Length: 191
Image 1: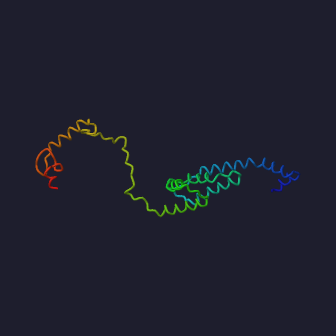
Image 2: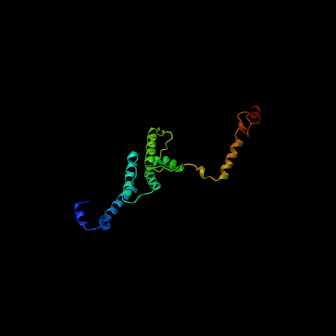
Image 3: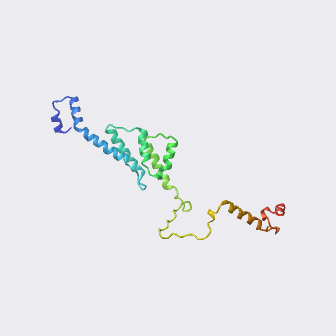
């Protein structure tokens, strides 16, 4: 205790000293708690950051809250850490929640470090599997389509056209009109 504080509390009992110190420093503790909770709840891991340093920083905030007299539960702290991870850890979070894994914070840190190493070892997605967005057209470069719009024709007209092409076609196997080779009786018998 500071010498000035000792002089102030020389004539007081233990209970009076405790109450007096709480009155003096409780506002500061509240501000400290506010700052720590704000930092904890806004903590997000960057895509290029190390998961180890990120989780250790969050564990430090959680331990500071415990020292200030406001411990968070194990499940809440785990949820806060998992929610602060980037999208690249989505599969890990899904697996953790699906298997209802219940680990301490140091064990969770070890699991996340292992996942980070495995993700770095994994091969990057091949360009064949990647989908690229199409380019948007500039406002002035709209082209008008010329010609018939077959997708706007009524269904009955489209069906009539299909039926007429079947009757007009000739079989490549027997040479007769009215059917194609896949429906030709003599071709089917020969198979």
